[in-house]
Every structure is written in structure tokens, then in C-alpha cells.
Amino acid sequence: VEYFLQEHSNLPRILDICQELRMLNSVLDSTPYGFSLELAATAGTGNYLSLEGWAAEHMKRDSMQFITALMTFLDARTAPDALPAKPRLSEESVRAYVTVLLGQRAELAGELKVTLAHVLAQVAALYPALELL
Image (cartoon, rainbow, N blue to C red; front, side, top):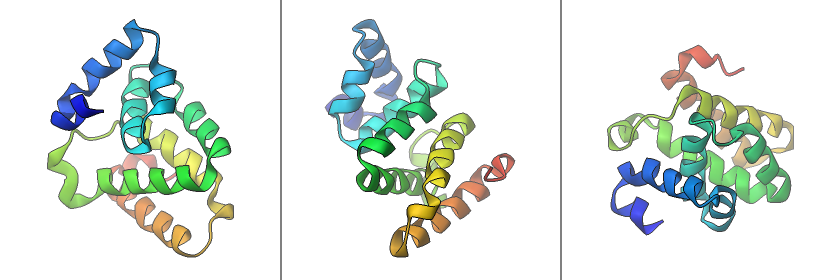
């Protein structure tokens, strides 16, 4: 995590190391969601991980905490003022994460529902081809 925090461009190298050591799932399960969501998105793009399946599993295991972390992550990564700081998430990664969130839409209430609407609006603006499923 520290290597990533020093330089966000280190993420592909971190993924390579995890793959070489066959520890990707262990690393994803043992790191904070902010980092694991980044690493999982990169792994999903490289076909090292079924991103939607991974996210759905975490949703079952740790529902509200994962939903909150995922929405915070997507909000930060799709905010118009945050775009130059990090590389854009792949459309496939965003689709997988949004699919998992939409599957939980009926379970959300209050502030989480408002946050989801806000995140979906940002995603729609940045990824118009997704048409929000």
C-alpha cells in the first residue's frame, strides 16, 4: 500500500508482483478498501480477476462497509476535478462496480441512496456509453 501511495503509477507493478507470488486474492482481502478497489479494477482490466464476482462477494461479506467504500471510491475517481490526478478507470471496471451497486439499490436508504444517485450521475457524465445499465 505504501508503494502505491508513493506513486499511483506503481499499481501495475504491484499487480505483477501479486500475480507472480500468486497472492492477489490475499492482498485484496487484507488491504483497506481504498487500495483493494484500485488494485481489483486494474486486475479486472487485465483479466486476472472477475471484478464483478469479486465485488459481489465482498458485498455479501461486508455489505454496508463495502457499499460505502465503493461509492466513496467511485465518487473520488469520477469527480470532474479529480480526473487529472489519476488515470481514468476502464469502462469495464466501472461497469462491474456499477452493476454490483445497482444490485443493492433497493437495500439502500437515506444518505446512501442520495450518494448513489450522485455517483451514478458522475459516472454517466464521464462514461456516457455505459447508459447506466
